[in-house]
Structures are given as structure tokens and as C-alpha cells.
Length: 611
Image (cartoon, rainbow, N blue to C red; front, side):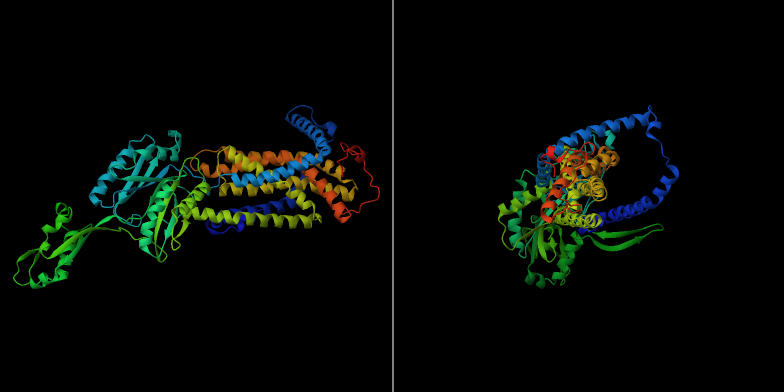
């Protein structure tokens, strides 16, 4: 059952391949130990103790009495089920149908959102803002955040670098107080801070919780991204804002933003070349004067004993305020050395233009990012984005695609069913070779729908999404649950072939003899998953769906498989007799088969539903 993890592709496969290999090697080593060391230890350590010599008091006696009463109750109820096999088969079929229905309706996600105690924020100021204005607004937002009782500290920076691609954006890393010192999760803190920091003096803060596992290769304002690209930048500039507005209208999405920046102020300077030539001033002289004043030209380096300092030439800040700053720029005439005002040589036009031109591949692109509204899964958000794209009626030349986490989520959804199907086919082949039967491997695999029902119901009851972590839990659960059917079918086939028991007596005896080991192994696996399901602490949200899926699947499957597996065994045996002329165990049907009276078995002439 590790095939889905071993051969899962993309980023998810690379993340969990080591886990699958480690688990597979551990199972192989465990098998070797179980077949060699364990029998040797049993031969040396175990001694035969007659039943009458067993203690009648103490924990061991109480445990034995408890299992005896449990087995007796199971024997009585199993008799009733074997007397109503048609109803039990309907329950098994209903379980299969319910598994499919629950898989369709369960909220789907990628990775559970963790509370790591860190929130990443992106501030966005008006596109015409200067560095000084952005700095003042950033400090005001930081001061408001620090007043929140759940915030411990923050770091903040602005300016163009590897993360900030335009002057009007800034970054923040908000560190929350330890989890035991605050009553809210990181997402609840974000939802509380959001209204206070929206349009704060023209600046908006977009937030997302920092995660231990992330597949995003690009920086964005919020958690999930959807990119539009078109060969014509004008078409993209026209339709991208409509698409973003359609996203903001969807109730499933929150904090919708876009990296489109087409409203930056631009001052176009046209040189009067005739006048400049008459005064002996070249266009290069004008370009140098503008760069000296506004371009922060590096002119020298001052060296000291311990450090070195770069000297940057620039006009004073008071002379850089608005287009009128050009009135303070003078050039020297090449003819007579007189000072000539720049405004007498140029004409200026104030327009708007893009601050950043984003591209994906070779084409202009606009990325819209969003968070999920409270109670909304990523699967629902993906459908909402697709509906917004249909409502916008984008032209045929404009292509849209999810990026980062959302893209990996869709890829994992497409691969999961095929990988699980491959695992089931492999298990069927192995079991068929082992039991020399085409029928009873299906009997064993019939235990799996009950595991799926239990896991999906447990996730929905606990308000958890069906994430990659939950898928891993179900894959592990399938291997655990499958052993219930193997224990029953293995003994029943052996009883039919060696002891010549009829099918109903064989499966009844197998169910009773294997009841105790089935209960013990199930309880061991269930109790092992409790710490994951109930664990707390930083990042516990990533482990919790694994424990919940295993516990829910084991509880439901334990109840169902103990009763439906014998009925399915008998149903397939009857089918094999009709189609092949012999039972599923491989024996030829005698003319008048003898039905021995095994404890608890029901004679054929008393039970019309018996095979």
C-alpha cells in the first residue's frame, strides 16, 4: 500500500518519498525479524500452561474474562448476521456507495494550515507614493500591529530588493506570543487585525501564516495564486482588473489582491533640441543633470581604518518634491558658461505607467492572490476562481492557471485515484497468488470501503479537510484494516481444504478464533494514533489529520468487517460454485456435502440463507 507514496509525482512526491522508503524498509526488516527471531524467542521463553492452572484473580484473569465475554457476545451476534446475510450484503454495498459519496462531498485541501506563531505580511501603498511616504505609512502600520495583545514582536522593511519589486510595497514578519499565552490561532489573529489594517491612510496589509511545508516558488501577498497571461499587454491590462473584481465578489475568497501596477506616476521630459543646440547643451548633459539630482549617483569612496563609505550625489529631499523640482535644475551653457534653467530647454508631461512589468515565460502576466474565507476549503476556492474566470469572459488569447500551492493541490488530486488503484491491483495479485484464488482476494479488499467511510466521517466531524496528510493516513489505514480480512480468510480457506469443513462452518470458526488477535492489533494501532490526533503545540495541525483518519477508520471498519467479511466470503463462495462448479477454496463440490455441527454453526436445512 506504499505504492501511492513511492510513485507520487511533483513536489508532493519529493516531500514524502523518504517517508515511504523508510516505512517500506522498516516493514521488510520487521518481516525478517518476525519469521526468524520471534519463533526462536517463543521456543525458548514460552511454556505451556494448562487452562486450569491459569490465575483466577488479578489483571491477567480480568483481561481474560473480559475477552471471553467479548468473544461470546461476538459469537451470538455473528450467528444473527449469518441468518440475515442479504441484509449484511446490503450494508456492505451501502458502505461502498457511502465511501464514494463522502469522497465527493468532503472538503478537500492540500496541507493543513499550521499555526507556527509567525505571520508574513505585505503592505501596499498607493502606487504614486514616495519612499518617505511609504516609510511613514509602514511605521504607522507596525505601531498598530504592536498594540495587539497577541503580538510579541515584528520586523519590517521597505525598498526594492529580491522580494519587493516596487517602491510602494513593504514586508513584515509578525511574531506572535507562544501558543499557551494567547487564546487565538494565527488565522484568528489575522482575521481580527485585517479590518483595522485595511486602507490605513491608503496602505493595506495582506497577511498569511508562515508554514513549515510550502511549495510556493514565488512571493505573493496572500496564500494562493492564479496567473493570467496574454501576448498583448493591453488586453491583459483591460481584463485583469475585471477578473480581480470578480474574485473579490466571491464569498469563498478573502484578501484578494493583484500584482498589477499600472498607475504609477510618470513624468515625460521632451527636449527642445534646437534651443539646446543653440546654447551648446547636448541631450547627454541634460540626462547627466537629471541623474545627478534624482538618480543617486555614486561618486566616490571614503576609506577609514575599520570601514569604507560610499559617497552618493543627490539633490536635497526638499528639492525632490513633485514635478516643480525641475525648476531648481540649472545647466551650464557650452558657449559662454552662463547658467540655463532646465525648464527653458524641455517640456514636461505627467502621465501614468506601470511600476513593474511582470512576465511568466515570455508573455506579460498578472497574478491574483487570495486567502480562504473562514470555513472554506481549497477545493471550494478553486471552483470559485474558475467560476469567476467564466463570469469575466476572458478572451481566447488570455490563459489562466493556478500557481504554487493551488497548482500542486490540483496535481495531487489528479494522481491520487490512479495511484490508489495501482496499489489495490498489486494487493489483489499478491493475495491471489498466496491463496490460489481469484475470488477471495476481493473478499479481503472488501474491508477497505469501511475504512474509507470511517476516516472521511471522522475528518468531517472534526471539521478537517481531506488533505495530503489525510490521504497518507488512509493509505496506512488500508494496510492495517486489510489484515482483518486476511486473518479470517486465511483460516477459513485452510479449514475448507484441510479439515473439509463447509464454507459457513469454516468462516464462522475462523471469525471466532481470529477475533482476539484482530481486536488486539486494532487497539494497538488505534492507541498509537491517539497522540497524533490529540497532540498540541507548534505545527500540530500538520499531524492531527493523520491520527484522526486512522482512529475513525479503525473504529468503523472494526465493527463492519467483523460481520460483513464472513457474509461476503460466503457470497463469493456461492458465486464460485455457480460459475466454476467448485467452491472458492478450490474443492470440487460433492453431490451431497456433509455439514458438520461446529459450535455456533447453523445447519443448512435450518438456515435458508446459508450457502
